[in-house]
Image (cartoon, rainbow, N blue to C red):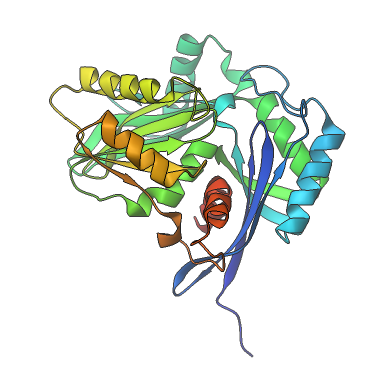
Amino acid sequence: MRFSLHKKLCGIEISANSISAAKIMKDKLGLRLIAGTTVPLPVETVKLSYQKKNIIDNVLFIETLRSALAKAEIGPGRVGLSVPNEIVKISIQKFEELPSSRRAIEKMIAWHTEKTLHFPSDSTQIAYHHLESGQGDNGLMLVTVAVKSIIQEYELMLKELKLDPVIIQPAGINQFNFYQRALPQNGVVAFLGLYENCFTFFVFEDGCMTFYHTVKRGFSDLHFFQDVDMTMQHYLNVNPDREIENMYVGSQVAFHRELKDVFRNLSDMDIEIIDEGRLIRTDMNLAKEKERERLSAIVSAIGAAQSLLG
């Protein structure tokens, strides 16, 4: 008997304006995009909020999700899910000493979250990742916090169509996970993840994350480049002796050439707009602008599918 070594993985991204779906395959040559699509959500279907109900019209949401699944040829089963950046809070927290057990660490983070965000810990969903540098334990934790009832809204909509969202992460984290292979592992490097209505900003020192910031204004905002400049200045104010050497940009809104021209005037540092076609094989004709835009738009859904690799 012959068994296929090819593993097909599916990811969904939900934003305020659309639902994206992607099906990828992992083989000995790496990742391949099999199918991907973005379907617009009707106006007033979703209203993003960290605390209040998000999905305003369940029927329109389900119809849009069903359309995205059909176009990406995704059936019932396990999926990775990207939820909107705007409905979670992500921060790097430093602790002088970490408890030895996972349960004790979770209790410590829950206490700290309740104290700083003023939300009772039993109503929040907390995930964390230990950021350990090459020099050993530095007490840094990347912490993601969301209100349970808000996350459950999206889970229930997927389960309505017999999808099992086994891994749920913010869109910005899944986007970074897709682009990260383009970043060098040495030096002080920044990654800017760009969306239409927000952007994420990561800084790494020799491959270890040391800074994270989200701004809920993106490429569509008139003050976008000013906000990027202020974010970079904030980083330098906190880390005056660790200047960024290179910045890499992953853009969900495409416009690669325009971004490169504007960023060149914003800073003297080396800035690279990452080409998604270098990171995944696809049958798309990426010589065409519309096809490049289509691939850029589904990167967070691809990253959600990648999360299933473990």
